[in-house]
Length: 465
Image 1 (cartoon, rainbow, N blue to C red):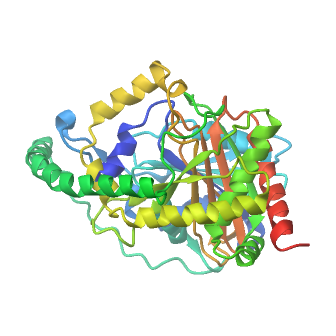
Image 2 (cartoon, helix red, strand yellow):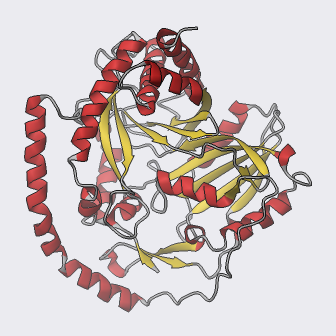
Image 3 (cartoon, helix red, strand yellow):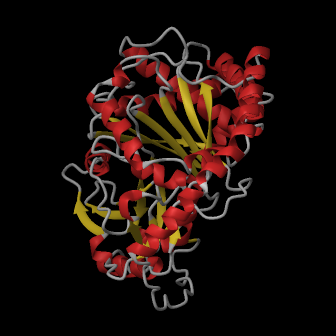
């Protein structure tokens, strides 16, 4: 039994049929490496053994009466792998677009909150001969770092490596009664005024320092200053998905060729260039730069115990108003260094601390108002999109004996920001997953195709050849 942190619970409260708060991923597998060949039943049995003692796979939500406190995770005594792992075949001709049509459809379906909040589809029939796995987990139970760790738990470094020696799961503890949960919730709420008082002084000081940074020109880009695009409005529950690969070695060559640049600077520069190409082709390129929200993991610096999501965020201008890729990279490197210094001045647990005051009814009402009244169509744009960079393993991984050829994470999208780009490195390749509202990003594959073109342009301008 574990109480959700306020930040974890907020992903539940923010969810609606249009604004789905799960994270997804497409995993492409080479079945030729599986000892004895691919067999779905063997894969299912292997997955069942792997997930049996990993808490996030067999715990479900228990709500506190009257919702006076955040829900708890409790073990599901009726856990059944067949309710979570399913088998599909991709329609002919079985190419990437057919695969992502399935992925987009599945990404637009909410998870059943009466069960552990994850699902997996094994997708066969790809023209490439590969097997695809589409996975979905609720953001309340996982963030980028935890997601990467979860994949590592399911994988091995060799195709025929033995299963992890997992101890028997043992007898499940009884879930607390509603009366006990209600009493705990009351006690926790009694402490909130004191907790709020403790937060006010450091938060006021933080705001004062932020204003001083803004006046001196050393603050990160400010939210609510983004230009409006076609994907900055009210979203529907429909999703469009695409993916693409980039060479991590070429990205590192660019980084070494430009003083002061980081791999993340290069990734953001390429993303900005790809978005510039996409919007320019559609006649929608704003005169000012797009603004991205960039999640930052605080797992290593957080002092809080428990909770799946330990994340903060910084804002980065993508230089979509700059045509020259090298000039864009230099601008991003300078601005991102400034944003990181600003971010370091913010205590790692600030977002987690304030999220403890998240209220389900308030959040739910706010989401409905934004959707029903079309508030995302009016007023200033907070940010244009979310871009995440999740470090992955530098070695090849094997899932149930099958080598992973592609690993494409897909994050959530929001009213007002209907596009998410997430990149993850794995074995020398940078895998790019793109997900958007289908009505706002109808040709998401066009955007995916702009990434390798922008990488080529930036590499030629910095490294040559």
